[in-house]
Image 1 (tube, rainbow, N blue to C red):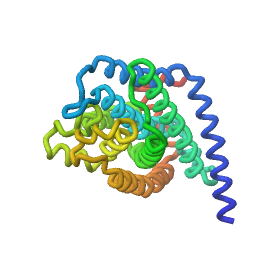
Image 2: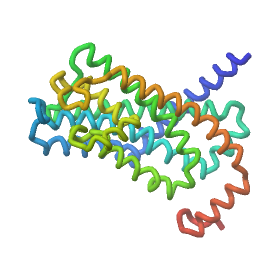
Image 3: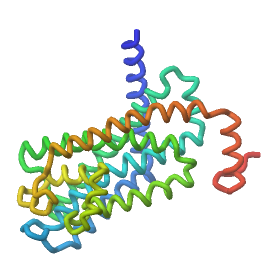
Image 4: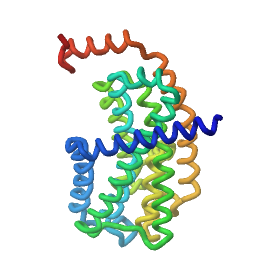
Length: 290
């Protein structure tokens, strides 16, 4: 009985995810945001001419590998929380209370949407980088395999965490400001756009706690030749540590996401929703209803 119920939830979530993905592909405004991120990454790489210190590898290749990790990270930890907060404000979580299996199906749908968006953005970045600025591509079957598992494990590490964050953020107007400052700090600290060895050791140690540093390191191992290991703090790719840290964050995210989303759904009520809408109307964020 439980297996049948979970199959039904999974089917409903996959169907809803496909619908949301089609809506995204038909929304030029949302698509333009992802395309802009790719264009910025390729433009930055095009203006970098020096090599990674101690290697003969173009710095642009390291930068593109880092941007690949950051774009995966951004979809899970910036875009997803904003989507969840916006839909909560619009009453989506309130409706889930009346839907059997609403939370699991909702999470599956968001995972479908986020994974498809992240993988599509990553593929576009690698293709545009290779064509326009002679950017890096995976080296042989081992490189493609590493790219696959690092991408999958990286998304598992950040998507549930993004869902947990989205469940506790106050409202869409404050969500972006609350998320972007720590995310930009991690972008700088994690060695995504320049070698992490150029940063002070305490900064490297702080960055090593968070998933972005390890996502970037894993993607560099897939996209860059072995000579680039000289620019890594340990002088190696440390792939077992990449897998361990990302797995730990994935477990933590799953442990937090479903309880927090259920709690947020339980706290929703028609009066709360109406109060938020009146407040938003008074602030001018949405048109007042007559």
